Length: 373
Image 1: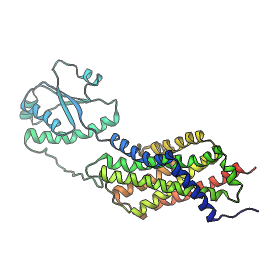
Image 2: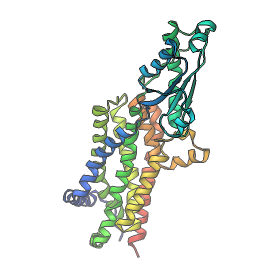
Image 3: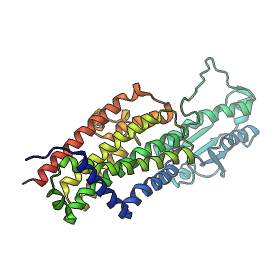
Image 4: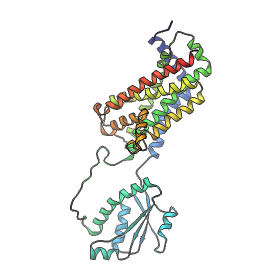
């Protein structure tokens, strides 16, 4: 006779899993230590703001105006100025990685400025790193306006004045953007890895046969093993949240309730994937390898964390939709900086809910196939 689902049996499995977690320092260290270490390491290392740019200056004018132009770059806070001899090779300076850019000020720079009202200087930028070169190029327009005002004492005459204001991140601090996204990557890796080992470990230890000798259903096993790791996943999210707010100063403009619901749905999706891996592989080494592939690569490359989804080829824009990390990324970044509401986040939340149902059903189905003759 086939047993029906009973919450009491699922609760007994849950208590058994909690006792195992408490006795296992590796699992506790993974759940608590990994989120803290990763958010600290990547939070400081991943800074898209470019500072201390070495700029070599070839000044062939040696005038007051040429010095003021170079000083404008130095005072911007982004560039470190280094003067070189006039007979040096500018291209070789970039080839040898001595500088990221070269400022060439030709003779008669100040005279052209006073007589004709305009003067030309050339900037060469190392384009081998296109992302850094793009950031440096973005700094130049602001430096140019500051230089005009400093040299001439007046702002540049423009028929149309456009004032730019950045909403949600006025200082364009890249950590405000990267640290919330890190929570997606960390929880994806952590969630899948934690549950990928649980059933496989039971098969290797021989305790699964004892468990299956009792009138317990696969759904009770899946639910009983899922719940303790959901709690541990929330512990990791709390650590990431506090680190982002207190250490990196990232604001939170949204609803904590929506963050809780989104995190619950995302962790359930990730951990259900881990259970699918665990019930199909039955070996911890294979489970770890699959969990790293399924957890790390999509979360890093296909969630919008590093590359905007909108910039990907059309095929990959649709391909990313099958990964929970893409939808949780929209939720987290929307809540932290924009204060997105339920109307904006209902789509990602419903998609994650659908993924939870599908993944849990797959875990139960594959579990049945594996344990029944």
